[in-house]
Image (cartoon, rainbow, N blue to C red; front, side, top):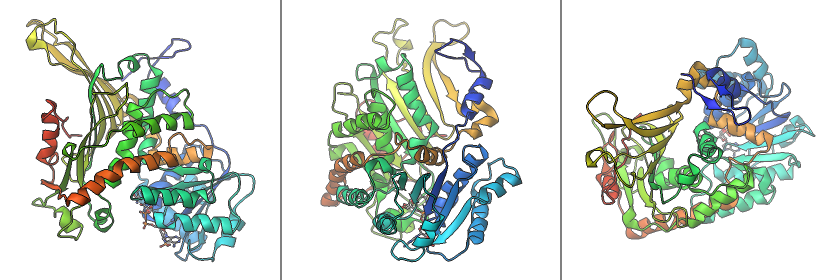
Length: 505
Ligand code: NAP
């Protein structure tokens, strides 16, 4: 499908070929040593290592890059390379690579046996690290080990000026624990060395959201309460908590999804234009949004927990806790209290075992003030939909005349910019969120990572909601597996004369 995009400089039209060339343009990163603590774990195997291999194949990694797996399991470099090869075969099936490329990548990999809480292995790790190159420490371990790892790295003199540390979610479970983690990291790393990952921010479409907002004159003038009726942010999953019920039961949808991913998406939609696309300028604006969030009244929040279906056990069975009051679903109405957004609600919802796996942001514009085509033709709205998964892309619903005879009947049609459709098989070359974020760490670009004060502000807003549930002993509403969530969530919008968009792929 050819897309006519206009280049601002020479006003030439691009077609699909040009877009593919732009997307595929790979800028190699500087030499680096990357240590993956938790290198034998699930995240490393499923995301980090296959992602690095994809960047290797794309020619983005320097040929002398070093990747060092570190964990307590005893094995040598050859054993670890075999495990990495297996992980790539299992989780990198889509990667189009020659055998030599895989051999080349594996030759860059080694392994050290270390315990974050012990002293063994650290001098060996130090011996493998080079001076004068970027040194990235990826803490792909539980947050309980962040402080120990930072302490050991310091104790063995492995932190250089060019060192960076990458930490995974969950970053705390409340404000106090997030502050404690920030303090532990701050003992040995400067804030500009700390990369807190929220992989939603690495998605192509999320960055495209900023490009659409701040690279076009078309949307920004309408991006406010005067023209936007409301905004819906949905992150729906079909999976339950099978296999990780024990972990999830201590967390719940609010901590696991809303405090980080949904909040980040809300910030990108609601923030003021930063003065430049620079890490602190962007993060300052996001922080202002979080600080402008009104406390949420408990009538404006619906918590749910999925019931059993004919094929699947209920949440409580999965969590192995028959009395669990942890939510697997949250829907809420949120207000951003500032000039731009006063009066425009943001409706957020996320849940497990829902009808379809889909993540999207929908900006629903107001109706035209007057329908010149008569009352029957009214009721049309422009909706800008930013799809994060599946089929990342952006759609703008516009109203046109229904073709053919029969008078002036109006119909809504999408102007679609789906990467998969526009780029065909080459859409696979768009880096996945983890790959992009790891390359940003090496480049030293923190724009797509959360700053410490941002995370703390998000917890400061979330904590009273969770504490309120605990104080009131609130029990989540049951909902059917495979549904759109509890009925009360539908009412949240019905009361306002609105309705949720369908959850579908
Ligand atoms: P995991 O499968 O349990 O792996 C944990 C890793 O840490 C293993 O490699 C383990 O290896 C190592 N480890 C444990 N204790 C250690 C110690 N004392 N010293 C050194 N290494 C130690 O966990 P995961 O799923 O990969 O998750 C890692 C982190 O990413 C967690 O914070 C998790 O919340 C977060 N995360 C994971 C996912 C995901 O999809 N898996 C998604 C988002 C965030 P040994 O036992 O050999 O030491």
